[in-house]
Image 1: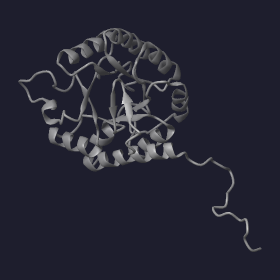
Image 2: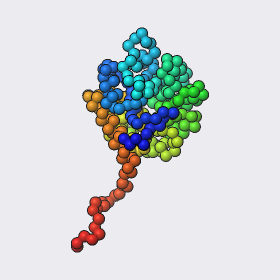
Image 3: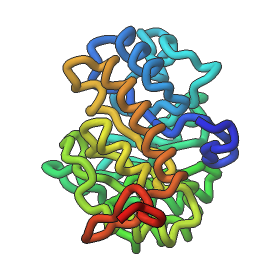
Image 4: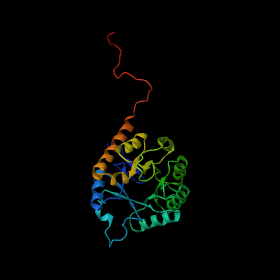
Length: 259
């Protein structure tokens, strides 16, 4: 990727636009190998599900190259604003930092976010100095309200978490992208590299995923495919695709051809 085309998030800058989760792998060794193959520089960790606070037990952070990786703690598993706020505070007290992926689940079956509770929690955490990245539905109004509240990015879903359905509503994402002044990160629901490429071709700033890699038959190979998908999609976006036309257009000019 072009050295000038960097991803800015909060007060940090990254080369990679692929953010990868750490759940569902067979062991920490596979987690590390997948993150390396993905080229991820930001890694999300569920504070309530993975040990990052008790140094007396096997700790995920001991298996990661923290010299090049930013840990993005998330509030997965929280169902109320107060739970999410408490979990974010716990991560910061554990020394993980003030960057947080804010996730407040509103429905157990779909795992869709509770947007009003997410906005409520975001407002509190931002006042406390957190850099908040909220997981939301692909709702342009919700994205605007969270941006106005001071979130450092917005993270609309592509499809339900872990579904692998890919981008179900590219048109809402396009509206969010048109109006957003902060990074737009597609979060949840992608299944393969073409989904990632599509998100980047739309103009999204980054993609966050977990199950699509960890649940693949060959996670390390899929991690590499996802990295290449992000790179290809970003380059296609920067290059600018041709316009869609109903009828054919000759590939070669016809001026000067012998009739």
